[in-house]
Image (cartoon, rainbow, N blue to C red; front, top):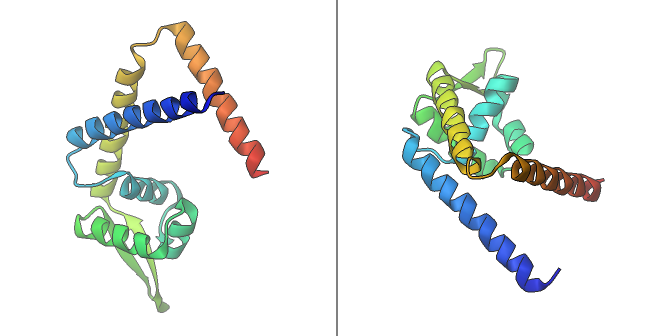
Length: 144
């Protein structure tokens, strides 16, 4: 593949991603980006966790995780739980308001993608899906 084709592809992917982020951000009523939403999802799926565990699971630094946790707590979307037997052990947990925010984020995210893909016909969607599966397989093969 020619170098110019790769750079054009990268540029097109960035344009699609940026447009989707802008559309999502305009529709989402909370002042959050994707990172805190990923943390809320992780808390909902796996329950209360230490910030260091969350950072490792999601791939953030401990410093970034501290900042994300602080923002979520300040917005009332997460809370810190202190272990009664060891006050040094603090876990982050999603609140009911956090569950509402996560649900809203997931709903808006689905709508953004539905609108993105509605310009493709069934054949194009099948081709795109096949390409994505091949890319994921290539990533998995390189990680092994």
